[in-house]
Image 1 (spheres, rainbow, N blue to C red):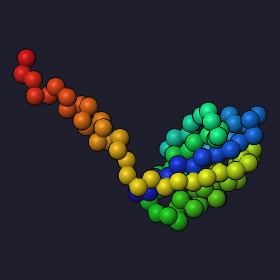
Image 2 (image 1 turned 135 degrees about the horizontal axis):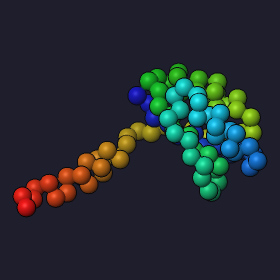
Image 3 (image 1 turned 90 degrees about the vertical axis):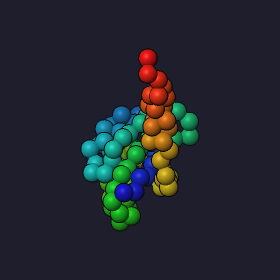
Length: 95
């Protein structure tokens, strides 16, 4: 499974509508409105690179109000390792 993050520069008055449209695209798992250089960050999970290209160019790229984008592909998620460690704290206690 491929995980990618699409960083979007969106017309400020179109952010809510763009986010709503993107939420309904196949392969999109999360959409965040953020501060900083970009306006939206989109998390995409797909089985193949070709699917990623379709979501980004065939889906997200056609949403109105988007001025620019940058896509980054994740190599590894550390969140599960961190969560596993956090949940295992104190499990060796018997009281």
